[in-house]
Amino acid sequence: MAGSVLQAHDLWGGYPGNEVIRGIDLTITAGDAPLGIIGPSGVGKTTLARLLRGSMRPTRGQVTYEGRTVSRLPRKNKKDFTAAVRFQSQDSLTITDPRLTVAGNLKTAVKEARKAGRTHATSTAELLDAVALPEHFASRVMLTLSGGERQRVALATALATRPEILVLDEPFTAVDPQSRGDMARRIGALLEQLGTAAVIITHDLELVERMCPSVHFLADGQFVASGAIGEVLARAEHPAVREIAAAAPLAVQRFR
Image (tube, rainbow, N blue to C red; front, side):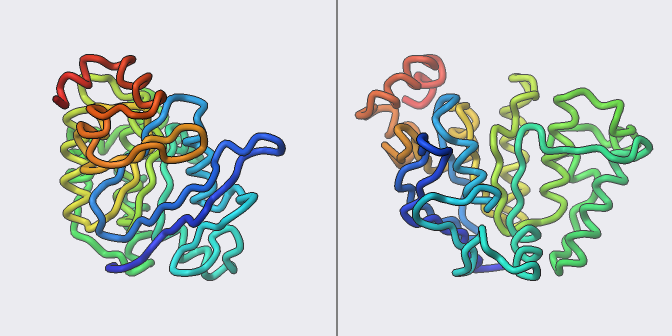
């Protein structure tokens, strides 16, 4: 799994007349420590995730995986890309079989990983533990889960496929605040065990502080500050960083 690279170079994108991403450079390599991308709602975080995924074409620059342009991958290479680089948004778990259980969902994901040559010994219980769900949830039917429980299972499913790179767009929105810290710790440990790099795209300062040694602050379509979150907030040189810091004074106080 070592060495696979997802890279953005001078990346611009958005919608006609409204480019919300302007000149982003980013390199993510399999095995990297989790990286945070922080910004308020409406700043372009989800657009950046779509550009990285290739579901949106850039207006300038490019996103490449192993040197190939993501938005123009041939079918075979696209299959390899989607197996190696997983994207998990806050509402991306679709349930098509009303009888499907949590265990069945996770076992399907593990089989998918095995077919792609990404075998691992992580059990259903360990995957559930990583998202702070007790083992008895394995027998639950997916349709009976709450929004927060589905979001946790979606994360466990993404981890079960053992991707080389995992891009999480606001992964904990439906999870109660009391559980987020415990989940961040457990998921971080499993990411390290699996050797999976992660990009955490969020507005949640405490989440990235718990999971990410370094962060990028996104504003005006660009990364306006980068580094350890405590150091960036302490400097707060850009108005957008100061605004985020002012909106979460208790979180900022923890970092100092």
